[in-house]
Image 1 (tube, rainbow, N blue to C red):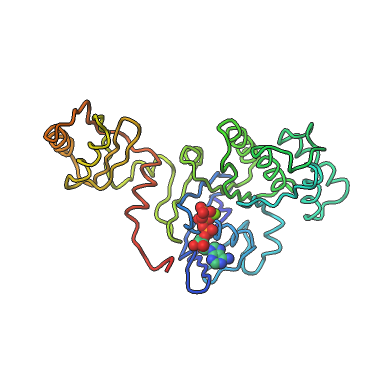
Image 2 (cartoon, rainbow, N blue to C red; image 1 turned 180 degrees about the vertical axis):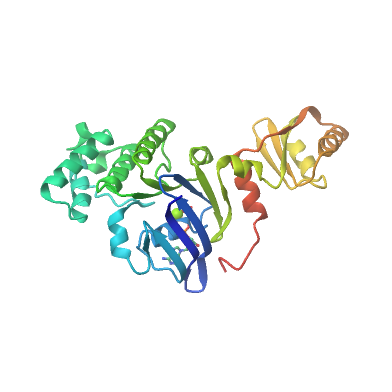
Length: 313
Ligand SMILES: Nc1ncnc2c1ncn2[C@@H]1O[C@H](COP(=O)(O)OP(=O)(O)OP(=O)(O)O)[C@@H](O)[C@H]1O
Ligand SMILES: [Mg+2]
């Protein structure tokens, strides 16, 4: 198994605050690796170190076989980076943006023309190539930003929230492009706050307060969740949530429309307690049943139970 990215104790401090703390990460060549975590977890900081844009304070990272501290310039040529606030030029046309990024990578004039046309076709913007970038919709700007990250045919793609704020159709189209790139053997590290997008990755890693707090395939992450989930259908739902929160052994309650998702590190028996407590409070209970955890459940439980650590202080 060859690794596209490997980090050992990767750490980055900004003054007194530690944004990334002792990160050990392995990303296999050719996989789509999803990077999840709440705002401020350290995802962007990690990506910037892996792209050779920011030096680690401590630890090492190897990207495409090169060390980020020693070979930053060589790494920049081998990777594509779509930043969270992507760096398109609004007053250039679609084509000019692609050409600009192709130029950054020192392609010859002929290679550059081919790369730009090929990328325009790939991202479906050939007919809009003369449009001003500022005039594109948000979803198309994201597709163009992906094109700019891909134009020099990098082995590894770093995509920082490539679908943030996009509608479901635009997100689907973006993911089709990611699968196409992965099918060509490229490795993709992608951050997202959409849990259903994490389901599309081969491996996911959860980060919180600068630390890795869980990783594996989506199936593994669900199977290894530390708490059981019960779905409770009861009316009225908000008073039901308040009652269930007061039951011993209940670690968390989320309201989803007409139902509650109840988290507990305890084994069986809780369903009967919930039923009894709700009935005792005069709340009508329709069903209480154990359900399989979703990745959203995994995310919530991991972030709630992660040790506080010294990060972020
Ligand atoms: N240049 C910087 N100087 C000082 N602090 C920084 C700098 N860059 C990031 N940080 C801090 O490091 C922490 C991690 O930020 P980072 O942007 O990596 O998180 P993130 O996981 O990408 O969050 P989000 O999901 O909001 O994009 C935050 O507390 C942030 O304020
Ligand atoms: Mg970020």
